[in-house]
Amino acid sequence: EVRLLESGGDLVQPGGSLRLSCEASGFTFSIYAMSWVRQAPGKGLEWVSTISGNAGSTYIAESVRGRFSISRDNSKHTVYLQMNSLRAEDTALYFCAKEATGVGGEIDDWGQGTLVTVSS
Amino acid sequence: AIQMTQSPSSLSASVGDRVTITCRASQGIGNDLAWYLQKPGKAPKLLIYAISNLQSGVPSRFSGSGSGSDFTLTISSLQPEDFATYYCQQHYNFPRTFGQGTKVEVK
Image 1: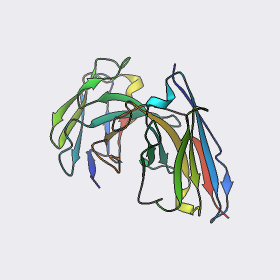
Image 2 (image 1 turned 45 degrees about the vertical axis):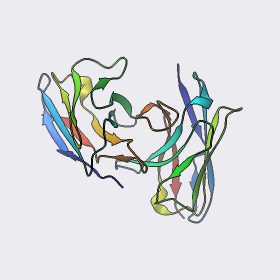
Image 3 (image 1 turned 180 degrees about the vertical axis):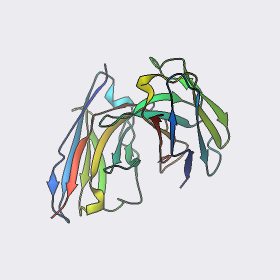
């Protein structure tokens, strides 16, 4: 059974930083691309970032480029989202997600999300 | 970025109704189209991938169709557990984009 467990969400002031983590189990982690998708309160789903299985390729949404970065540690079965210069509009539930392929597939498993609140 | 436009944004239906949701991409996306269901406070769940392939464990009342840039999700006979919000997503290229969602509510 695939399990994705996010952590690291918190209340942070504008301009602050957070690092989200997602620990995966139940599948061969290094084969699959991993993504972060967020959902602001009462809003729809917004893709944030994707990293390939071998970490050789990363992709980031324009709305967070230059502030967020994605990485992974395949030895720890963990993917990270480093979030800097946080803004109020970054407030959202952040989902960790597994793609169905190395990169380029649909998302076939999701974590339960970790809440990031940016407010003074 | 490819824009994904769903319609309607919301609909009211009764148990047993046939429900159809459409999704239009701003350009052709091959078969790189997926549908997800999300219930309040829960993570999304994959229903259909590659336009028309049912994810394992998803009831056969769900089906997907379409080609090029126009796609459809159909629920043949709406069940109580199907009241939720539905999203389409393209994974043809980056940035990945989702439709704005269609909320299926009780009539």
